[in-house]
Length: 257
Image 1 (cartoon, helix red, strand yellow):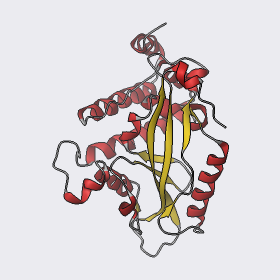
Image 2: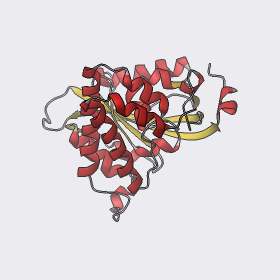
Image 3: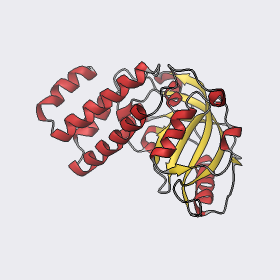
Image 4: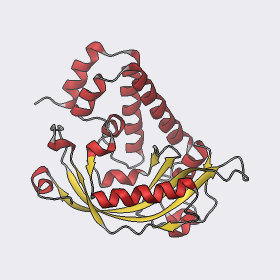
């Protein structure tokens, strides 16, 4: 079985300018995160294989997404090397989350931060339901690489109970439509989320996991430049992950209902 570096070597013979840009940007982001104490793998073999089959338009969108993330990271204050202000003790990545909201022209009108714990995973979605940011403590509960998340749809990577998916959609649609207002505790029971992609095609160096997930709160995000605009422009969600299994054999035993 080939290593990721060997695949990159073979891949090099027929890369386009966009291919070079994406691979360089992913390595740059992964390297930057490592300097911040975040161990985030840049690639997996399977992600590279899928990436090769992308149309140029989709590659161009990937470049834009990566450039935005890179800009966000490099223009934000480093919360891991500098002294964290007292108010930021709520969460080690609070400043980065606030920078992400500013970057995407979003803001909170409710005190979401009162509900946040330091170990929460925080995710930001735009009004099309597309995730534009997640805190990097997510990678302590996941074995996927940056490129896996870039090239695969979420339903290929994870499996969770169907009733939980339904509840998630109800909350997100309720927030986006304006039917649900304020900071809302998500009434979703703890449940197991299982990494499933390697059951289809093996990822070199990847050990699938399952994680016990507990949702926290969800809240609307609004246009940062217009206090009178009542249309919801996105949502922010908190959750917590507790390791359940690591490794193919143990994770295969986990049954999702």
